[in-house]
Image (cartoon, rainbow, N blue to C red; front, side, top):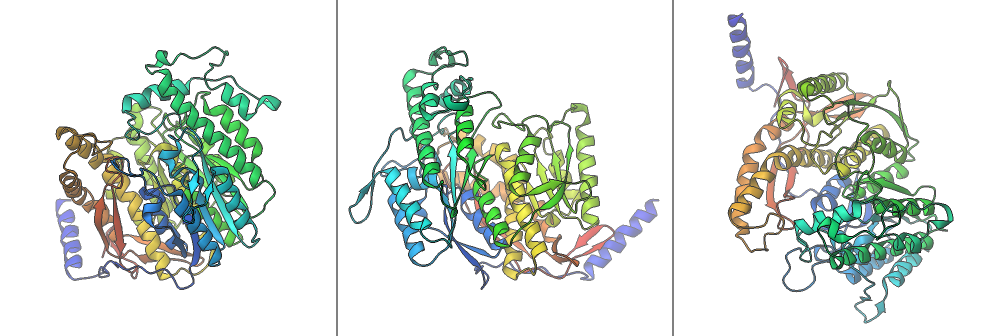
Length: 585
């Protein structure tokens, strides 16, 4: 037996040394959009990766080109000592008017950016703040919103997605002097059940009146949650402002077919929290085609995918969902307001998908382990099923919703045993509330693109970049390097949530993170570069991945929570050959 293994090893080495297989293509730095790309005017929620470069990758994979304002207009600056910490509402508004003047007819607009200067700022603004335009005109937020709806709504060829959020349970750590302790205390206060409203009693005024009351109608004492009335008052005032703007928005678009509205539930809870009445009220105002779904940082992906599906006349499809771990009937984490299988189901409804065991499209989900003694079995079963699907040529969306309950064993097994580059979408150690929407948006859009027709060179690279980005960040940064980097910042006497409070040597922190990322990403990149991807479904065919390079690492908000980088990929190749079960370049 030993001689047999030695012979196979020598044979494999000889084949690899002989140069069989396809040469690695060099990554492309200047990645121009396809000539026939559809232009979409896009106002990001803020400048974090999911809302910025990840959206660009996904758009490229669908032969779309995102047009965006200058980054300064939509950036959030947690550590700004001077000037604004938020985006420029006037600049964003005037940029949108310019796109309409230039003939753009597709829009994806985050209203938290347009009306509040970004998601974080929307959680901190306690009253209406007028907007000063470049010509000296002063408009209230509601006037600004109504004006934009009038302008974009006057062109019936426009397709406009307006994205808004149900405010999370507490403001952002590191912004406006809010500490982690403040966040936890106010979140606990807002997670307490409020009086449930229904029917004619479900009004904005009644919802706001109940903000400070428990389910039995008694006043909630902030001191019981370790906070004070001043901190709570700020949070509740921001909630009220957000809710009244939502009421205004849905009234303004009620009679227009140009606009579709998507609401995301931010940082929630399974309990009947302060959000419950707000969610129920917004649901009563939604029209056919509008939606309210769990998750916020995945909303851009969902709107872009839905826009693409509408553009190609999507009639829906079927998909087979299989769970491994046994806890799909529970929330994936403490920040979701519904069970995982319910959230998957509501995203199926949004994308017009029906569950079918015989479907071509496969959705495989690893949940938290129901039986801790079976962790290895759950992982092994999923990986065996995944490999069988890939070998059969079935497109697979993979979701790791285990919330890190399996440690690194599962992800290491993925790198060693799975051709990761053949997945059509992946989402893992992202915040669990955003995991389903991220995986489903990329996966359904990619599946529809493959079904719809020919694939372009540009879209191939867009798909490779989008998949490489999320896999590398999830497996390498969020699961390994992030905690190590936070420890490094703490050792330096700094704050992992804000490198400027107190000020630390950010360059040395980045150097540390980059060094660790280069080490941890080697195995993942090697896996991807040896992978093939599905390039056509009818007839079924594959192409080989090109080379991958990562550069320009950065902390967009000078905190350890997210690290991003530019992903470059080379042109696809002839399919890589598999010898003795191993793909070669």
